[in-house]
View 1 (cartoon, rainbow, N blue to C red):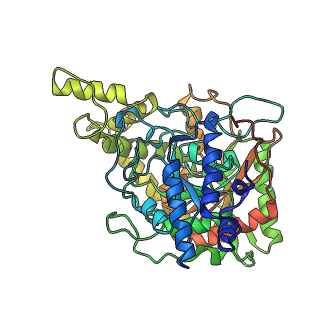
View 2: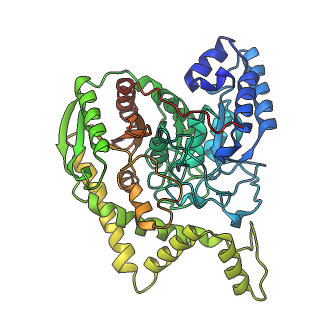
View 3: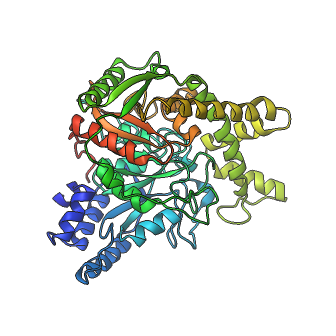
Length: 492
């Protein structure tokens, strides 16, 4: 396969500018890589004709001296983003062959800046999952394998297709969404970079909703620099989204100075959780030493309500999901099952259209919102959520950012946890707090475990301070010098 697929996004921009290769050549290499990787099941829709047309338009712009910020860069899009004229399913049968007549704000800004569309990526159904095993199109396979073992591993979720595609060199970057860790956890499982921006930094308009107060779009790339480049295009105020922040978008690449001297980094004692593998703890300590050596000051901090974060999340998120998914009724769009009466049609459509995990979360959400339990569950969870956010506010009076593990384990085998929802939900133990508090958080690959699988560290920052998060992540990236990559066993 062409070495063009091994380039970073930043290096590809440099090569295009220097005319070392054309956007069409770059797109062709990635289209071929996608076609040869069907075994991974990362894509649910491939758009090779669109990719080549986009690339030719990019070459024409460069020839006129009108190059755009991401001109000619092949990207793939999580199939939660509505794409005009291209099927959008949220990996669910209930959406059927739904083809939007409009483009999500985030993807429209990527195309505005010259990016090339390779296709739509697989995910957990409606973004509900931590392993990409709940998709109606079948599970995504992690391109990584344990040393000496051919067992199929999960790529994490819900943005598992995005993570697998970036790690397998099928695209130079991908969009993801993060409701409770769905960018950072799969990024850590596949040895790539993923950032969840501050809630409101990227528009949610045109993204199929899971939990509206938690969902946030973000980039998934192979380097921190690439994430900074993509985020600059994805972010920005959108009047169509009432939760979109009306704040200027900085040039995030300027924050990557390599200098963290004087920054105070918090280490939350509550994140030292019993049962987490020792190698996760050792990697965390290594990250602390890297930042110390770079001149940062390390401080132990307390986030006292951390232990309540998972139960809070798994009340708030299903409650919002049950409300958002009420619109899928077989009447207005998507699939429909016949019924003799309207209620029967609703029941059959939703029963056949939603998978087991989505049905489970709808039931949980409906229960906690019901008249007899609203105060005991949903209202209490909202109060605890405020306390979790306050913990971070207090911590940031002492520190500039927080360092923690990204996940409690490396990638696990397919089927290993799918029968145990509670075990699956524990994968989000280090990530949900940032969503509940609406804060930016970055996962960066930092090493391999004893079985040769990637492990990631996480940097959590103040609201709208993605620059410091990326700056710290960039220093960790340089210190870790993570160059490992999966073998190309999936090529057909």
